Image (cartoon, rainbow, N blue to C red; front, side, top):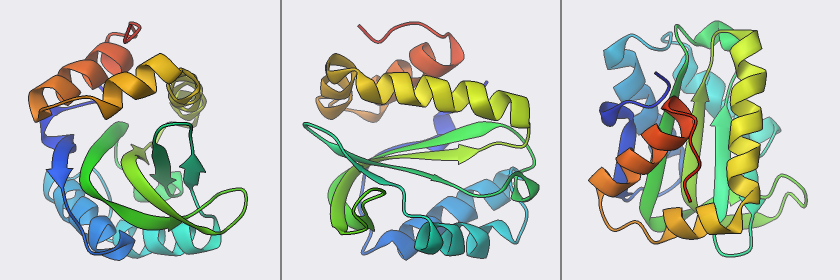
Length: 155
């Protein structure tokens, strides 16, 4: 299962993306899902290859690093309480991001399928609106499990 309750976060706030990455690393290291080097690797990767995406009604970041830092295949989902600044993948300009998907992927074959699923999710305005309008951790968790673990539409 890609989505687990302990990897879905709702309404968290961070000062900046480095604080967010430290939070992610703490959670993932505790579970044994990433190596100790993950923490620094994800910061460097984001600096060199920004992941912020401007969508119609919500801005998203799809953060990830190389597979050598992953011990398993999981997704970290965060719907933030207040946006944090990432750089836009296309323009490299600052972009306030509301929703983050962290890809923790060890298996390169699964990597392509998950990227396809994430891409399809982000291309659906109805799905993005559903995510944007979630009102609780439980609602977001159910939605992400349904889409990524059960491979069913959000609509």
